[in-house]
Structure formats: C-alpha cells, structure tokens
Amino acid sequence: MDIIEHFLKVELQNQESYTEMLQFVASLYIRSGEFEGEEYVIRKLDHINFILVRERNGLDGEREISQPVVMSRQALISKINKHVLNQGIALINVCV
Image (cartoon, rainbow, N blue to C red; front, top):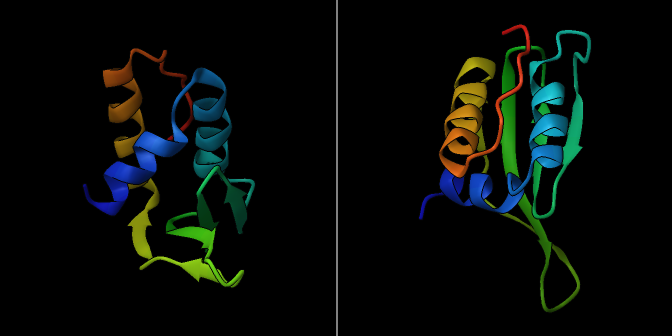
C-alpha cells in the first residue's frame, strides 16, 4: 500500500474527519498551517501546495517522520473525495 492510500485509509474513516480535513485543505482563507490527524500531518505551504507526512514516536521515543509526499490542492481534494465516495461517506460541497 502506498503512502497516499494508507493516509486516506487511516485518516478518513467518518464524516466528521472528512469534513474537518476538506475544510482545511479547500479553504483559501487558511494560507499556511498544519492539520494533525491520527497518524499524518498535512502541511499547507500556501493555498496550492501541501506536504503529507506520517509522524509517529519510535521505540526510542524519538519522533519518526516518513518520506514526505508533495501534492497540489486540486489533486489532494480529488483523492480525498474519491476515497470517501467509495467508503459511502457523503460528499460536501466546497469551493475548489
């Protein structure tokens, strides 16, 4: 399973998590920041560019960060919506 598939499976399990994540990603009013999920962090560099990283604590207590994935806003929204549609979660309408 690739990083994007694992991210979608872990982070988008219900309507609430989908709504919160999509509002962060789609918002043109949030220019930069972080959205912290269960295992992944979405870093918004600007209104178009995002970095997805998996963060977890290793056995030694040190923070481990996975290989980052860089995505555009449109590509990330598309993958999120496709995943939730397949899961039977109701899509919400945001300006894209």
